[in-house]
Length: 331
Image (cartoon, rainbow, N blue to C red):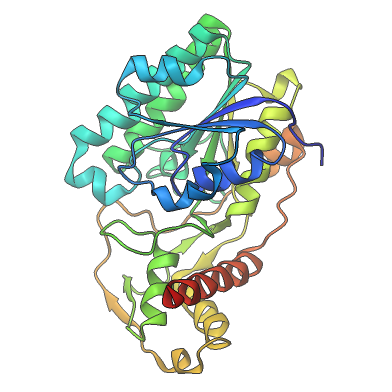
């Protein structure tokens, strides 16, 4: 695959899970500016980049327009990943989610337009499909949002579309489906299910599945996401611009199947994990029962070819968590 080289790329939320992986990848051949306020990102995710002369850290908040203006100065591409994720967080505090995800997004989009960046690629979300029961999820068919978070991510798409048509800025939204992999935080109230379950299994604690475990998701390994970001930056096909793409593997896995795979892969490192039991709890408010992406649009217009299935990605993620745990125990 062709690579982006010798460009200046701004990655907002660059100290977060997805952002720090993008920083690591694009730093190999480009200059990278990371903007983060460390509300959900971590310094240890980007610590190894700080001495790299091609890396610049701006500690700031996208809710401050002047900070956004500073961050986009001289930039070729913006990969906008700064946001407050999590459906439960948005239900508990819709005002802050809106300030960051909508007002902050608009600040970044406006600053990017003013700076005449080549392209604005942003993290959209599968939550935009809302109450639509259609499977697989196709980009042009959505339902009504089921959470404040979903509302904010849909508003992002609307703003990007309006800015493309009104001001001519090139935008591409990537609707992420349950991304997982290295650097994903297992701690905190809003930890994603895979790192949370991994941490619990490693401690021989029983993970709690919301519902009966038959809800399903299109779990997407981080390297597939990196590929999609690069393809979104590279494309010169006019039909591929100013639209949104599902970013997924295109395969559905139930939570029960996920837990079985996790136990299998983690037992290679600690055979006691095979005996850890599972607890079933209540369904979570705002959760959709099933999620499965159609990736045909991305294949056709961006030549997207995801390299990691859920199980292949899970093996890599489990290895990373295990090695990370060993490193921490040595310190």
